[in-house]
Picture 1 (cartoon, rainbow, N blue to C red):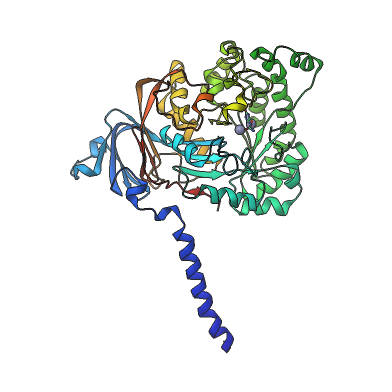
Picture 2 (picture 1 turned 30 degrees about the vertical axis):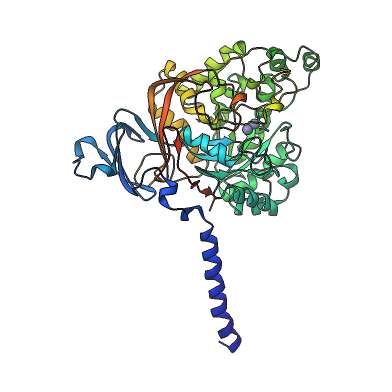
Length: 504
Ligand SMILES: NC(=O)N[C@H]1NC(=O)NC1=O
Ligand SMILES: [Zn+2]
Ligand SMILES: [Zn+2]
């Protein structure tokens, strides 16, 4: 070692430790526990008669230490010899894995007047959601590069009350630029998302199947998914005629965006999804169709692709399961979304597909805007912003409507936690199991409430939510994120101690 090296090495080591200190100084993990959690212990037991585990519903206790679940004790093996203050007894209330919403538009940075990380994640916590995966569009800029992902992460730090991961965008600009996509994935994007129709956002143009094929080939290396908004515009003569009809009628909007748009997109997708088969050129990549609304041909095609061995999954959203076109009042643009909410017969078929196991999971597609863009006074369905605001309500909505179909607690956990965790590559989340993060939702299935102006709602613009005014059952009592009690009966922990989730 020469003289220069002798002098420089200790300096480098010192510099590295200063940088390390500064980095972790900035990390949310350094908040005081009392700020992060409404419960003062970091080793405690959650007791309930109904704990939903991957092995069934049990009566017993979940032992939490630091941020993890360290044991699950059945009632018959429980000796109850602990200090009482380290026990939280929820009685008959359901203790379930926290919900993982793989499809939320939090609009931060750049459009925080629409939602933002603080309000969105507080709403999530109040709704039993412990992890959100943020969509790459509706914020400014869109998340389409390593640099723009960094802006997201910086905006999220110390501003999130639940854990938040990020999808990157697959757009024409980066689709054929392997270096750019690889940089985005290496920077921690959990996967990519693209649109097959105009997204409504200028810096997020739509992709065709060639872009998607390229995207899948890169994703294969990283074993991460591509999420696709599957609608391809089919501008027929009737579309143009219908567009000239009364724009206040929901039926006008519905006709302008028929199920054939979804079907066309899915047909196109299936020409590239076969690349994901074992032995195929994109083996390791995965295709996930977001917010399926058409329970007809589109659903059948997706089922077919799965049975052919394509690595494909798909989600639907509570609004397609809760509402039908027949009920939507003319001018009530709170219900405008894309693809649209279809008729009651379609809704019934979506429930059947969910119960039969054809639909893999649920997501919110929480997509708010400022109220002005919803044009509530004018009631113009063709011009209003398309997007449903629902983040805080997805658990009670799924339960209220699902219980009529005999939905079980285990099914809720599968659709809202276990499968979404797998899609997002979160091995330590999605189930109440030893070694997993202590991400837990506690809720009371039989408590009914009305979503009126007295009800505490944390999304930024409650007035644009289609759920306001409805009566729901299933009240969230408490939410734990990595062992922190972040929400309890209308109160949030003072500090935002959620962690940004980056793919390793
Ligand atoms: N840009 C955006 O959020 N679009 C979403 N809104 C909606 O209703 N469907 C979508 O894909
Ligand atoms: Zn979409
Ligand atoms: Zn969306």
